[in-house]
Length: 141
Image (tube, rainbow, N blue to C red):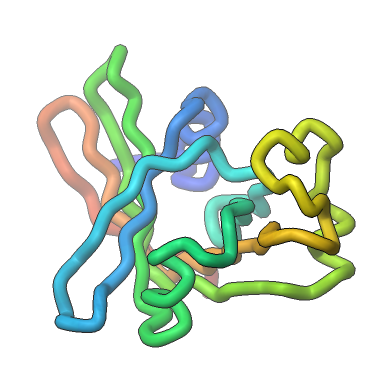
């Protein structure tokens, strides 16, 4: 059993350059996509990514906020899945907070004039896998 899930899982997440996000499509099927690491993390409960607003995933999350995210440590063959909800944020304040000038290579219209949009994931529970064992855990109160 993990002594400190926030620390154990936070350390695993911070060392990964790739993350996976899951959505539910209009037919009720799961869809998974590899993404860069989140651009911001608050503990192991809240995560933010930037993406393009015309993305198929944006449509999925607007129709059904149920989501999961996954982080995998290939070196030690361990990982964590977090389940919760994904919100699509087009708020100027959060976009300004998360924007980096290097993002112009992905969003030609820039922070406010293009298709730059934010995904915010809020975890409710998770499942951690390490040493050929899995462990479920709750997040928050």
